[in-house]
Image (cartoon, rainbow, N blue to C red; front, side):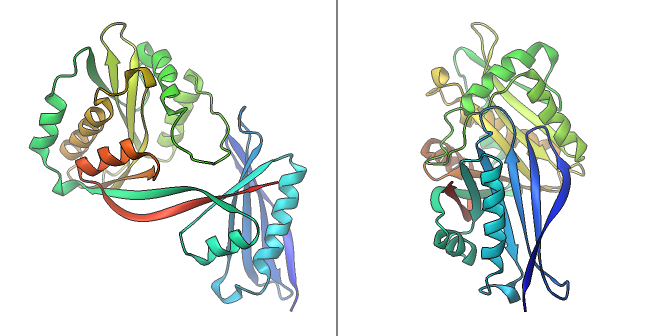
Length: 293
């Protein structure tokens, strides 16, 4: 029975990307697989696309995935992309499929979870109250205060050298508009964004930050977003200090919150060590694979 690949219109647009979509069906019209190609549109990432491909388990190893991938890669080339990335679980059929088609593993992420009810609240308070000469902590909910907006945007430079191993991820530019847009995106989902930042007493600038997104009902698991310290301020224990305060706040403010989730590149040894000392436990891994076009 023949397979038909139909391009679809995906109306989901964001300020950072747009998506193309395809549906694979049998001649009877029965769907057997789908594919999405996210095209990054921000300056510094126009070369990159991200693949999300799925085939019904009963239809795997019948050529459906290959047909979808052929359509996706042709579109990526037409769009002028030079790299396509995709995620898979290590050792999964998805990883094997991508590898056979020329994708190579460029990044391994380990996902971890902190069971919030098992945290040592007294220990967290001790970390938070410890002296970090020349620095102080500040925290806010939702939108960054106007008086901190500019320096907060500049502090996102701390993420520029976040380990991405061999991923052709490009560059990301942060300004005040983008910072505020990120908050609005979180709030539009009904979630809550909490930020803890480290400020240099010398000039009042933000030199590091950590963000936590909490479900709107305060239940289930919250998700860490970016954590970073500007290179010139590293080596003072600021990341652990900020993260301990974020955990303390989550524990005290959300009694029904179960845990905190985060993911870290295996090559990011400093952040992995911080998470280990704070009690985060590994749950699973994912690999990023990349194809050069």
